[in-house]
Image (cartoon, rainbow, N blue to C red):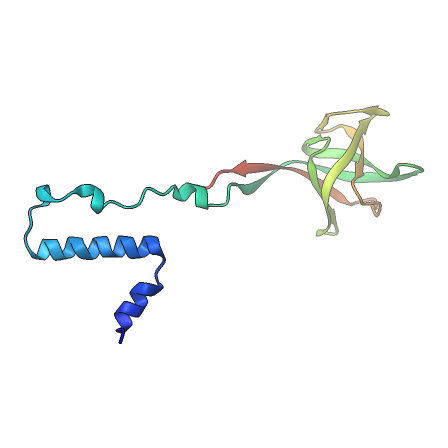
Length: 159
């Protein structure tokens, strides 16, 4: 007949049982007043596991790069809807992630597909300048909308 303590011990994973039995052995030897110098310390050390590897590899943190206001909307065949914008704050980069806000509510989130300045492709547009932006999979853009560009940073988790 097993005791509740034995059932609890057998329910533990093998590594935990090994660790618990080492701790019990250490306590029993301490009760017998065995000098610590006579003990093999490797028997009582924690298993050499890389706990860092068990964590999710990356945690995503957002940093807002820039904000634009839609001033005009253009419907272009074969391209879709292009927003004529003014960069209000920061800078906007092509292929950055973006969010579309209408009346303070998030309407869309995805990638900025195209960024142009004077019909020329642009990598980035700085504050105070005008640009044309097309959003991946989004054609419902209206004047007065706000587009926020952000960068996804990967941060490794630590213990």
